[in-house]
View 1 (cartoon, each protein chain N blue to C red):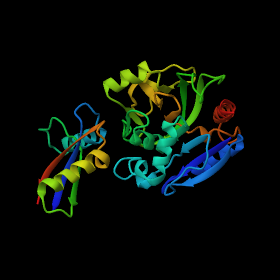
View 2 (view 1 turned 60 degrees about the vertical axis):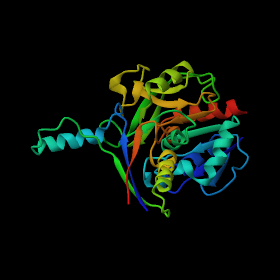
View 3 (view 1 turned 45 degrees about the horizontal axis):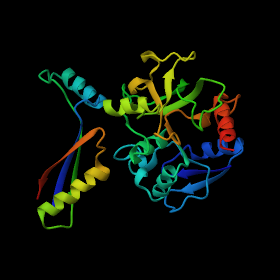
View 4 (view 1 turned 90 degrees about the vertical axis):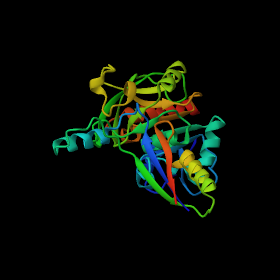
Length: 227
Length: 80
């Protein structure tokens, strides 16, 4: 299985993602933002970080970089594209997934483990996953998911909500919402479910002794689903 | 020709920074405020002499990059 991780100026989770993908069997290539063409890939990842220094709006500059046209074409032809953290911010700026990510409600940079609940397993990312609640790590300043009322209705009607912030038992409540996201939303699909954007970092949960194993569960399942 | 654009958050979008600035102003004694909203201001020097054409170019920029129309409005406020 072939994957590509795009490196933008200011990306800083690209190598972690590379390590994670390789650990679970992907043949991963790093792709520079200024390249024109994606290598042949089964999965494209937009990693976390601070692309272009978060200037203007997080992800806005990266969404216009050269490689993104190729990523957008790949996504529109049904290819799997996963945006993590800053990658999620880039995805919303391209319009591949709906909504935007605003500054966290309490204006603080949040760096901690959170639990997220899967809402929809009818997709390549979560199909056959034997858990409904996963513990991932978040580290962001602009993760406050927002969309218009009409968009919210549409994403609900199309089952586009991928992840909700919750407690360890999967209870979704305001008190488990770290950043003020509308409806506790932590991750969103596009309509076709081949594109996913999420604030939590599964690649930071791939080693029991360092962090946790829920990222390992996610990546192992993902590669099996792609095979 | 210089064109200025101002970008503001739409009415129902939460503006936490504006809220904190409001609180700070309130603490400093500026009590007569009902709301503060923070926005962005751009001054763009366009190589164009026709003010309408220059405005149109900046409008296009606002739509494509400078503003995110899901949460923001923009206004071209002056040309000189």
